[in-house]
Length: 214
Image (cartoon, rainbow, N blue to C red; front, side, top):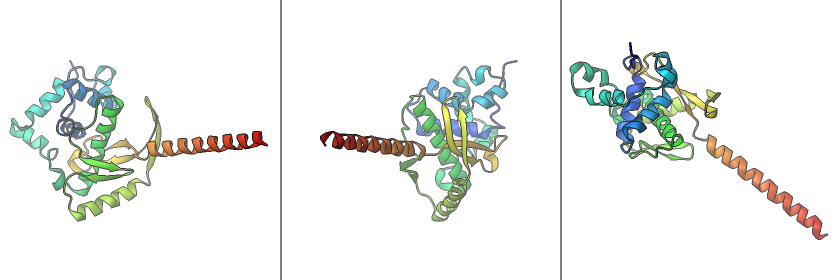
C-alpha cells in the first residue's frame, strides 16, 4: 500500500502549506513541494516515503483546495487558518518562526523571496507587518527571552546549524511538539568576523610597508 501523509497528527505540515500559499504566491507546485520535502524529510521517511520525499505536489495542493469543502475539513483547518492578529502569543511566536523557516529554506533552495512579508527584519529584530495587541507583544518578548537561553548547536546535511527550539502550542503540537530554526544573527556574526580578519590583514600590511621604508 502506498504511504500517506499523516497531516492530522502533524498540524505543522498544514501550517507550512498555508504559509507557502499566502506568503509565497509566486511559488509553483514544484516549489512548494521542494520546501515541504526539505523541511519534513525526517517525518516523511518515518511515514514510508522513499528518500523522505513526496513525489507529487498534488498531495499538498489538494489539502489546500479541500480545506473548506466539508465540515470535517473546516474543523481540521480552523486553528490553522487563524488570522495572525487574533493568535495567542504562543501561537504567533511559533507562526512567525515557522514563516522564517520557510523563508530560509526557500532562499537556500534558490526559490526566491516571499511575495507578502509577515515580518521585516532589522538585524536580529523583527517588525510584524500586521497589528498586534500590546499584551500579546509583551508576552512574545517574554517567550523570546527564554528562547535565547536555549541555543542549539548541531550539524545537518547543509552544514553546521546554530538555532533554537520553537514550541508548537495547543492543537498545533501534534506528535512533533516543536521545530528548530536558525538564529538570525549567525550570518551577521560571521560577516563581522570576516571584517575583523580583513582589518587585521590590512594593519599587518601597513606595518610591513613601514618597515620597508626604514
